[in-house]
Length: 134
Image (cartoon, rainbow, N blue to C red; front, side, top):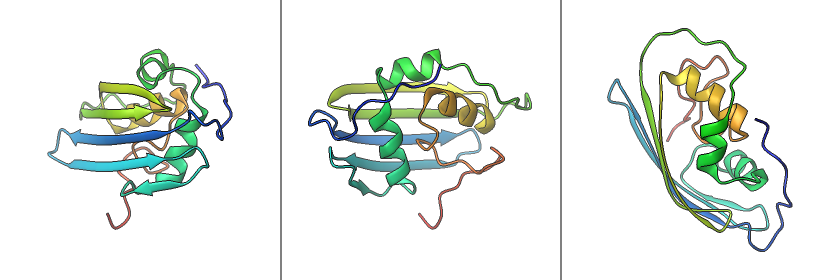
């Protein structure tokens, strides 16, 4: 499912979320992300501008986008679960998302298909986190 585009400058397009990622190898990331209707991004998310841009384009609730996404990228079937939790406001709507992916590559594929590839910062090859110095 490709995410539909909406007007990113809509007055109702405000996001304020907490993102938690827990990897089966005990890697844990916690980020805050705030996006206003003018495209300004704040918080400690390593790809905050890109993540806000992605979220601002969603036309369906975040949980629906993730649950219905059909990834097209092949991934190895090596189990290394990644659990994503998102709580707060996404595009001025309450959001509570909990989703477990089989591994990081699957997370990247599903989030890309959902239209939010930068929600979890993942390297291009889908094998490692791309979190910079955070």
